[in-house]
Amino acid sequence: MLGKINELTAEIGGLSANSAGEAEELRIKYLSKKGILSLLFDEFKNVPSQEKKAVGMALNQLKNSAHEKIETLKKQFNQQSDKGENIDCTLPGSPFPTGTRHPLSIVKNQIIDIFARLGYTVAEGPEMEDDWHVFSALNFPPEHPARDMQDTFFIGTNPDIVLRTHTSSVQVRVMEKQQPPIRAIFPGRVFRNEAISARAHCIFHQVEGLYIDENVSFADLKQSLLYFAKEMFGQDTRIRLRPSFFPFTEPSAEMDISCSLCTGKGCNMCKNTGWVEILGCGMVDPNVLENCNIDSKKYSGFAFGMGIERITLLKYRINDIRLLFENDIRFLEQFRTAH
Ligand code: PHE
Image 1: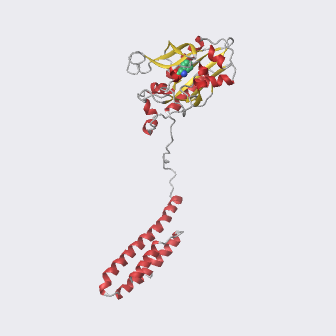
Image 2: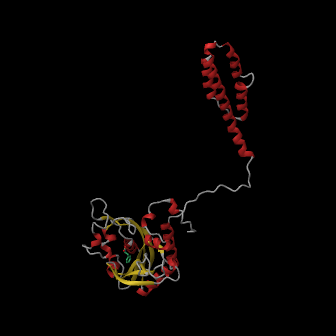
Image 3: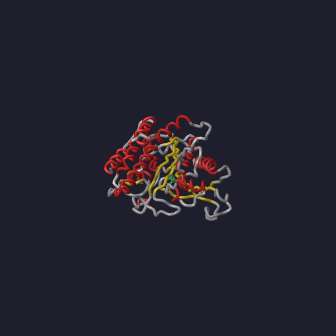
């Protein structure tokens, strides 16, 4: 008897049905009044009394598991038919989570849009570069500290192959390929061997701008940057240009904007000065034009370069650059925008 019960337990455990009708047939076969289990219960009275306890328990277990099994077989079809028949079309749909653009992408796209209105196109260059495009063509003397191991990541042991430390390398690539007029911006990732902190990262992003034509003046540079600052940070924004130095521009300047947080009154963000630096710029050095086979007697132009992270932190009042690289969705979800 126990052998039979075991066999049946295995048999029922392995049952399957392809329709509600088949499941009902199985119920009749095993569990109806004249079904296989009833017959087995009938036989129970013939079991010798010393085996009754064990056989009785096994029989009850079999009955329970058979009920459960048939129930699950039936349920699968009930649920399926519910789907077809009981849909309530007036219920609101289930929400569907959509992703968000990264704040750096939002700001990069805004910068591209603003300069597109001034007639700038977009170009890109490689992140892995040679010394010529990152330094030599840009008028860096051979011993310039920016080439130092401290700042530049080299690829392998070849001192000529580097990860670009600025997007100014794309100026050279574009001027080598194209004669003026040139009016374009170059967004991209740059790399510097710097310690990571709340204000600096070893990987960040820049947008470079280049405008070369006949009779381009420093006044054109200033007016273009003023337009950009107002579009990006609001129409009340003021700018100031401070004299600076870059090997590839002459004269050179750094541009500050009036602090967007305290509007010039003085706060932590602007270190109580009322101004924050956002970019470097200047008139392209004639040596750079000549290095790219552009006639520096006929043409002049300006270039500028800004950090996308810096602008993003200012615009969204974020106090730690590392938040931009942690990819914590609780942070990223806050930047739902049309961009
Ligand atoms: N390449 C400079 C930097 O990374 C910025 C710059 C670009 C300055 C173009 C002048 C002109 O700091």
